[in-house]
Structures are given as structure tokens and as C-alpha cells.
Amino acid sequence: MRHGHTPYGYQIKDGKAIICQEEADQVRRIFAGYLSGLSLKTAAEEAGVTMQHSTIKHLLQNKYYTGDDFYPAIIDQETFDSAEVERTRRERALGRDNLPKKKQCQRVPLTRFRMAKAEQVFGDPYEQAQYMYSLIESEV
Picture 1 (cartoon, rainbow, N blue to C red):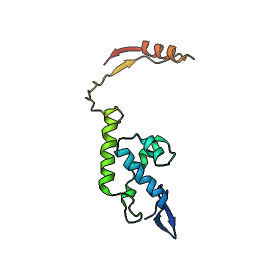
Picture 2: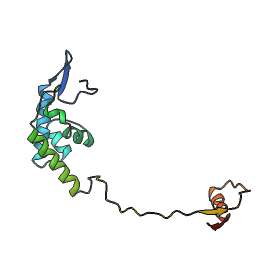
Picture 3: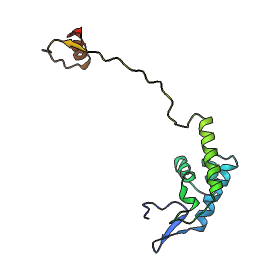
Picture 4: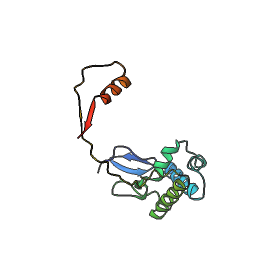
């Protein structure tokens, strides 16, 4: 399995992912700080990491930290799952969950019409639209 970007906390040596202990400790402190109630940015700062808010969010969502065939585990699955539940809870509380809202689809009736042939072209798009609408002769 090949990975294009090495997540923070790992380094590639001789074709294998190994844990960078200092960065891995920071990753663990970010998760712990966030789960203790700190904001993403504050948790990272207290762990000694300077990252953008979105980068920290992606770090918390990176499943590689729980380990797979290529990456050794830095955190356990329970910590990862707890952080995901907390992140989702906070996003919903702030109205930032970006979940698609259920929309009631309404069917728009198909309308057919007949119009006269356009013989003029206007430089102003609004004037052109008004002219085109004036050519509608009747609904079919």
C-alpha cells in the first residue's frame, strides 16, 4: 500500500512508516487536550504545535493514527472515536456540521410555449432577456 502524504507523527524510513516519537507525543496531547474541552487551536498550541484550525481538524479525523497495515498506531481506537463524537457534537452545537439539510423536492410542471423568431440582438443582457420574453406568443 502506498501513501502520498506522510501524516504528522510519522516518517518513512526504508519504505516503512515509523513513529516520530516527539510528534506522536504531540498528536496524543492534541487528542487529550481536545477531549478535555480545549478548542482545536488551543489543544494544538498546548501540545507545542502551530497548525491551522482546518489542519488540526483533519489530524483528528485521520484514521491512520489508530494504525493499519502500513502505519503503526499512535492512539487507540477508543480515543479516536471519542474525539470524533466530540468534534461532531461541537460542530452541531455551533451549526457547523455541514450536513445536507433534508429538502422537500417539489416537482415543477413542464411548461411548453411558442414564440416568434428573434430578429434583434441587444448588447445589454437584461434588455435582450426582456425582448426574448416579449416574443412568447402563447403557452401550448
